[in-house]
Figure 1 (cartoon, rainbow, N blue to C red):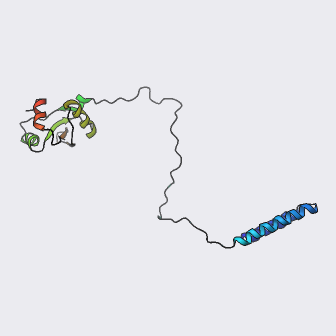
Figure 2 (figure 1 turned 90 degrees about the horizontal axis):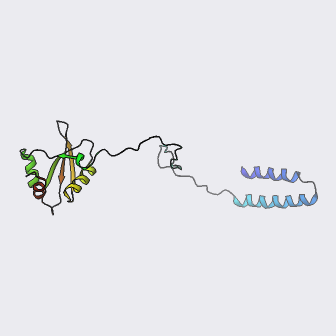
Figure 3 (figure 1 turned 180 degrees about the horizontal axis):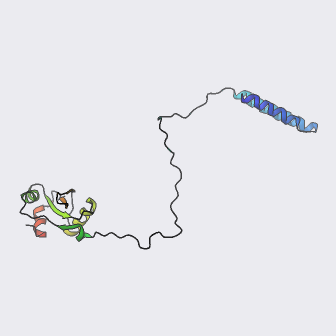
Amino acid sequence: MPAKATKTQVKKEIAEPKTSQQVEKKREQAKKNLSKITKRGKGVRSHKVWTSVTFRRPKTLRLAKKPKYVRKSIAGTNDLDTYQILQYPPTLQNPKVSKAIEDNNTIAFVVDLKANKKNIKKAFEELCKTKVQSVRTQITAKGRKLALIKLPSSVEAVDIATQIGLC
């Protein structure tokens, strides 16, 4: 269908010019255009392959925010420092705590409820100046957060416990 539309356009363009030279130029252009159209023929058109029936909005350009004025007068501060994160160790009368220190190479601490594992790890490394292998947390039935700090095998938890004053 597009070939017919272009032929009519060519005829309209031929009708417009008034001088014979302009007419000849237009005819030559029309013949060139017509030959291009007929040479192109019916090619195979490619289509985008859709792999999902769900439409996902494309990720377009998202500029950085440039506020005209500051929304907060005072910037938020981190309320938890090292000594607020690690509050105190649970009592050693509890057999589970002493067993964890000896068998699992872990030290237990009651920590602030807002503290996360990264904060706890950083605070313990600052205070005891030792590496921490992993931190596990649990909130007890009394509503306290208990952190079980596992130390690497190169460091003895009993030594750290005596250094802190647990044993």
